[in-house]
Image (cartoon, rainbow, N blue to C red; front, side):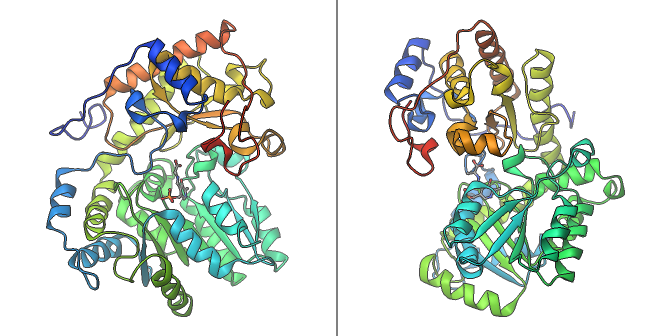
Length: 447
Ligand code: F0G
């Protein structure tokens, strides 16, 4: 049963609101065809993000009630530290309100106009925080061989070696799993090689570890040398290779909020603690309430349980397999937290400048009340997306422990229906009517 049923049962429920097709068409028009502007109550199944949207366990809720809200040295902080130290061996733990706060602190300290950061792929807020300091960011995504080996999130080691040889790299970031690249994992051997190169060049290596547990699961199942290691052992082995870690506990912390910046270097950590106190909060809570820290402490323990990770990966793989079986173009193999529909293949006649990804995302909503996220020309700009060789994608990110298999079966049906509408020529391109030039326009533009 372990691979076939959800490894939890439900004891608190939140009703879904059912809407008619006409109501959804209305709501969408009212929102300017931007799914970020829709009321969440008008969404039936929300796959907009896996960030902070998951269901907490009874153990987490119990820990939240038990948690104290002391300003300094809270019991809840000790609990978080203990849980963190079970998995990670960084000397310093600086709590933050979410992942991008950790990024802002780190890049404000390391960045600047002469700084150069390279990564397997920067997540958009990470890149934005680095670039806001005037720094340059370069993606070095994995090769076809990395993808073939099931580790499409790897950093290109040849290009990394060449970058480091110039002497101009400030820090290297590995995002695991690689959200910008479809949630693909990074192998332990790739991290080991990157770490050896960085240490030889005295360049700090940063782990963007939002989905560290999902990445560890893929290492365990796909990297033969690690097949008999436990998840905890793999996470510890990963963390030993890095000098810094940024974390959004909204993902593999199984919490609705929270994050951290973890470090080894005393001098750097001391400077960053000063910044932390100035903008996030005192060193034993950062941007979190005591109850949030308690939720993360328990969440870390639950997110690294093998049966939970097997269920999570299996759910993503199940949806991708069913869609492939129905001929719906999806990115394969699927990653750890989402299924990505390939809108360029679904709407081959809609040019990138007419936002095929957004058109498919709108069709999913009108057809079945699904909310997904365009990852294409609307998010990146048509020219930039073209230049980066990106496909027009639609991400269905899976909130953790929230939906049952019946929900996923329905979501699959809606995707199949939307694909049929695309083939029948009933899904057309779109134009931006307002907000085309605003930064991060996908959150606010109307279509
Ligand atoms: N790094 C990665 C790889 C992420 O996916 C995210 C957030 C962050 C950093 C920032 O963390 O949201 O806590 O500030 N990703 C969410 C998503 C928003 O939908 O993929 P945050």
